[in-house]
Length: 237
Image (cartoon, rainbow, N blue to C red; front, top):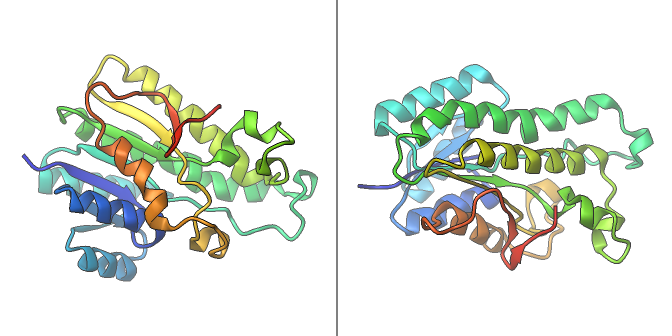
């Protein structure tokens, strides 16, 4: 039986690479994207299906869930990859960051993840080994943020960083709820990859950044749940 995965924000960057690498492993990698033209183009490049999906739109998410149910009857893997920095503020000090900036970022990075996860969970429960992977960041680690010896000390971006910290707790919360089921829920960081999110300033490639997400998407029964991982291993919360 073919494994079916949904990857949000998969029309480009790390999401596209996650879909590509899963497809190479024989997984049906459904490309979820809010831009239909770009989403369909990406799916055609991959030879994989496409579904219209805007994680900030409840109706869009529910429609995507119904489409997956009609087409496949269940979902084995959900990769919550869609994310935003909300635009780099001209003055990155937290005290100069308006609350509206946090609302914009949280709509995608936190509320969108909850909306999609809740909609897809009934389908994941039908899988023999459901996997949920949330794309987080080292910038969401409170421990690293407080360490002057790390490069993350200077990146004091209130909206983005706190959204990823919230996403980490979202991950733990779902992992705890689902601990007695076959579904595993983990967060991971792709590292600082060159993507549209950061103006392609990262030192890693999207292909490299996708590796840990693919690993978690294809975990065996003995794999972790409720973990925060990089390609090199566990990260401090």
